[in-house]
Length: 603
Image (cartoon, rainbow, N blue to C red; front, top):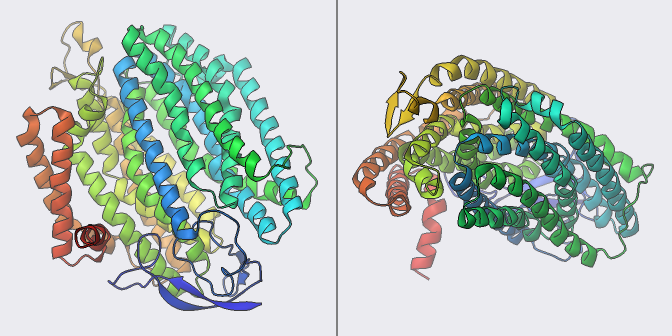
């Protein structure tokens, strides 16, 4: 066994380690074998501490010096993942913009949104999240030990089993589309209900491609090929963008456009899988899918897969509950939720989830609770710095952003105002949701997966109860010609978008803060020295307040400009004030923005 040097971040106000900062050296008293496989940490239970696939600052002397697989190094791998995610999100925003232009917030948009939920849920349950937790560690360990033949057998068996499982689920969805629609969207009736049934029969046909794409991601990441699997979803979006562009040019009716778009989703899923499958084939030419299930490696993957799916299931229940409740509201509520979520998830993906993913391996290697607390506190500060501003920007200038992205075709100013208000309601819980991702990782690093899962269940229940109480009250309010109304205005009342989805988003925000409080207590049982998230968020209160005031003023001043020009200007001014105020108040995380700018200016 060899001992090495583990790089971790400091808990002070200087530059920190992790995904975005500089590292500091701490002696690692654990062992690791010559293949780079970390041992088990003593003192807090038998918790596996595998080396991270893309951790940007991990450096274990004598371990990382082992012969590496071809591909990106750790730092470059992290940049590749971030770049791929960014391109995918931008393509998704373009797709969502065109989608609103073609379908707006009408019945066809609701039907397509409901039909899209099933493949999304099954992909999340069976795909990237679950396979990353179960397949990648086993496959990577076998590769690191030089057991390439056994690794190939495991990968082939997992591919075969996932193909059979996803194929069976797709067939089930096609046959039982009608009861699934009643379960998924009980508030739909008439033409909207029938259209949803037809769309579900098409969209479920593409489930297998999306799940196998996640398998390809696992293989490629294990071989340190990061950019392709994270940018491949651009093709999934691109296929739908082509359909939407054709619908705009040819002026298709919304129902016909929704049907064509469902087939575009299937084609996009195939393209996303195919481009990765070609890369996998070139990298591992001898890999063959099979249905072998008795291999020890396959058994280990299956053992890890079930609890991973259960953990992902709790998260998916929240989305299902939102969809069911939104289907009970006025037409357009489902589409408004989906449009707001497309923007809401962007900072969560780029900042919160990326930091949490990079920190989890490092926190798992922490030699004692004080080091764990230091890393978790540092990660919370970095996450809060970026996501707090994102939430403030969405509230202050979100209407301009929504108009700039979605304000085309049938999507009018009233639709933009409703989507902005839903986004603003979601954003009230954005800082809590982002910091909670770090605290979940803190618990997971010491083997506590049951606690965060139970807390997530509480969050889902609270969001449902609060949302149910508020949504019908908000659904009485509508927007017509830029003004709010609660009384009838003749036939136009039925055409005006209503605010019921705002109530659901507020329920989600309230639940996010409750989850944060519960997770803080849970994480402190493993890391008593963990600082309160209130400290990280409180240090940013003044910069956030100034950014909000400036952003709101900029929105008012720039209101006469087209949104595509006004939105980036207002966002830029607000962001400048936020960073400048943070730097003035000696918030250490401001250097994460200022340092790259200084390097470019003084190069």
